[in-house]
Image (tube, rainbow, N blue to C red; front, side, top):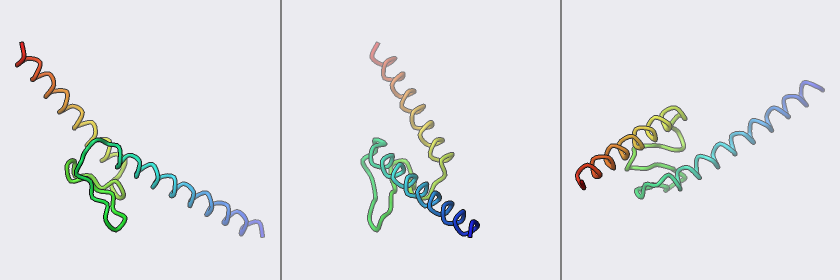
Length: 84
């Protein structure tokens, strides 16, 4: 009986983690700053940064965000140089 109770508790916690993960991914997808979002049929994709917020790993998402931030920084620095 304890094995069944433990299994049910683990299943409940796993399902909660999956639901929380999906909520956080959705918030990140909606607020990450790009305007070309695709969300039909429950998808959470961005054609601007080529991310699939529903399926891509955290590592890939972090890498794309870091690369985009670096590119924006370089662009801002170039604009500043050009304005002087």
